[in-house]
Image (tube, rainbow, N blue to C red; front, side, top):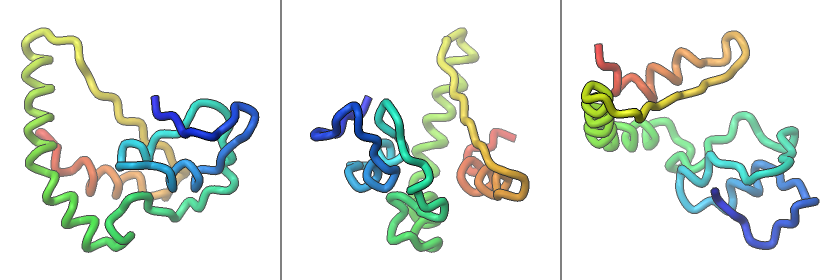
Length: 113
């Protein structure tokens, strides 16, 4: 679990505070335990996206696609061999929130079909 020095259990950091202290993408998307003020979070924010620009983000995704495909193949092979690891991706959003687009653009490179 990620810890953020200086935060007291009684204080509820905003999501922006959590993200500003993040070191990498994994940390940027993980909140510390306890209460978080979601109302103070900008739903249009793009934490750790390169410059927040679509072109740069898509280029970064393209660069990562081979590594992600390799990891997916390893996960599949382990499962086919009786391994117990699995991956659950939870994507929540209101109707017309763009969930389909997220799946297409983010997970599309990993589509085994």
